[in-house]
Length: 324
Image (tube, rainbow, N blue to C red; front, side, top):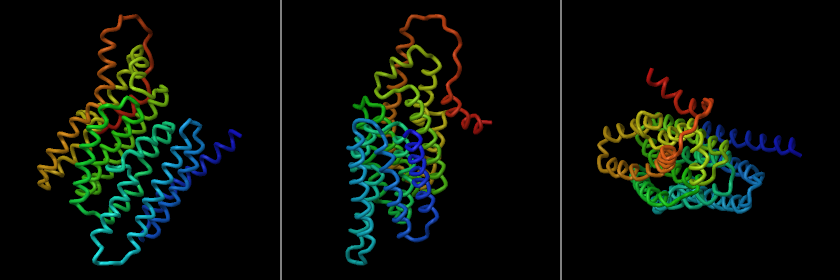
């Protein structure tokens, strides 16, 4: 049974990856929409294999949201009406934002990842965004995207402060990074690709670390990392990198996006984004600062030197190459 489940999961994962490549290599909107549907029906079995309590709820929620948004997109595209062009364009943007889990539709993604494993959480926050963003590139409307990005950053920075679940914190982090990525997409596609790759790299490191440590809630980080200085250091570096604090890796794409915004004279938008990103930095800082304070208050004990965890290399090795 275990071997059959392993083979099925790999087959559906290969189908999911192939649907992304089909979308990226497509020249027509119909083939992109078909790849989006293949992606949907490849993802649903991966969620149902999950043995967590809320897997049925997560499966139904994902299916309903993705199918409704796909229906809105194909209906809006198929209607050829010049008088309704602006309205249909708005519906397309809303449907894509629904697929991405962006404001005002971010609640479905936050509640869904609460009932999934860490591996699926990584897929939802990274790979499942590629196809909707590829479709969004065909309908770039700068004013609408910037408006929703600002609203998205504001709501996320206010909502994420009260979260104690690590999955929800990383979910709000994903939605927050999405605002900067879409602004980077408007200004430079090369910068957006680099931002997305670095973001996926950091998200993989975070989800893998949480999976290895079996950490699901904020208070668990305080008890797990307090007796292990190396893991505590890795945790601090990882989340400061995700916050975009220099000189860590996550600062590089944010800095390039900020420079592009300055070059395009988007000063007011840049000021608002920087203020809201400063507020959202609190998500990451409270995870690591609490551990540092607890370690200072702990009674010192002699321990043998522990081996360095692999996320330490993942976070620092690209930065080391860039600074050489």
